[in-house]
Amino acid sequence: MDRTIELGEVPDRQTVGRPLLTVVALCTFVTLADGYNISAAGFAAPGIVADWSLSRASLGPLFSSALLAGFIGPSSFGALAGRYGRRLTILSATVLFGVFGLLCAACHSLIPLVTCRFFAGIGMSGALAVTVANINEFAPRRLRATFVTIIFSGTTFGSGAIGLVAPYLAGHFGWRGIFVFGGVLALLSAVLVFAFLPESPKYLSLTAEPNPPRVTWKAFFAGPLLLLTPLLWLGSFVGQIVFHSFNNWLPTLLTDSGLPYSRAAAAVVVFQFAGTFGGWVIMRPLDRHGMWPCALLYLLSIPIVACLGLPGISAPVLMLLCALAGFCVLGLHFAQVFCVSNIYPTAVRALGVGLFMLFARAGGALGPYLVSRLSARDVPARELFVLGTIPLAIGAVVAIAITLIYRTHFQHEK
Image (cartoon, rainbow, N blue to C red; front, side, top):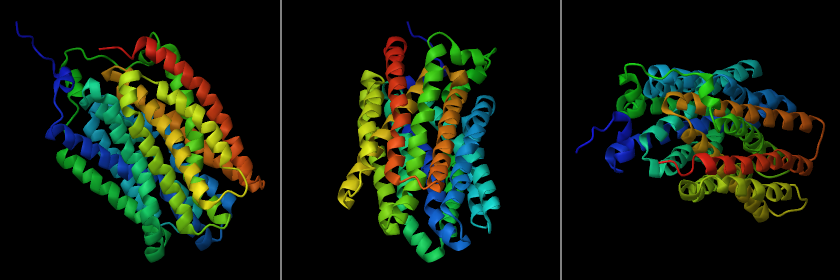
């Protein structure tokens, strides 16, 4: 007897063809624009310091403002996605950070620039959260970790690729050119979303129900989620303290230590691209074996980050350590993003990813600020790297607990 197939079941039955690949490409372009704009302030910072005669310590609010907006963007746009759909929400968030990215280039003092970065950060954090939730709902179950990894790779690739274009943009157009390029990239992605991105079939299946499930806080703490949800929030918080400290401060710290700007930018490129590679390496093990790769990468990251503070290391060794640090620190975040996008039901998935991103951005905002305070007190770079192992050690313990809970309750679900 034939069985009626519900609309929400369609993604799990589809083959990987042109319609699905189109969605993947569009979502990846959105996250690529997001990643570029996340890192834009870090690469513009040396030019801003020189142009406005600022101190290094004054860069803390600039680096943290867009990340601090993560308190608002993910949960707000996640809630909007549950009410108005994934497509419209992604479009709105992308337009928001594109417009304010362009406004950053028009600023002539620090306070307006920090303000514009804050509003851009609301859009960036919101777009990323909803895009990750969206691709989870399009992907077949057997390939969910793979597809989430591909989409999230857009963010890391964008954050790394800026290091390839920033020296040219800064050299020909000044630091403002870095922000202009990012704003145009975001608005272009918004046009493509408007023209070609379909609505999530699982979201449409909810709206077709006579009594669709309501979004309630209880859904985030039901059963095993009572422990898993707060553990994921804590894991994202401590992991992103380290990641965004690297992402924002490496160009400035390495430039101050005597490296040319192009070499310092290359270190961030290596860090980001190796992190993207880490995500690609672990995507199939995540699909097959659950969250063990996340715990392993946390444990490996601790000695690697500590070694970055060793005195007298050569440039090739520095690049190798940056690559290994990126592989671990960013690779483990890929695993966390996959887990959080996979454990919640459709009705609360976008908001669930949004709340996870909220804690990630909170850690990301705190990390660069702490580095700015410590730098103001003349704490040596080698000690900063050692201090960076503390949140990683906490994350390792949390990741082991997440792995055990996920394996028991979610890994073998059909």
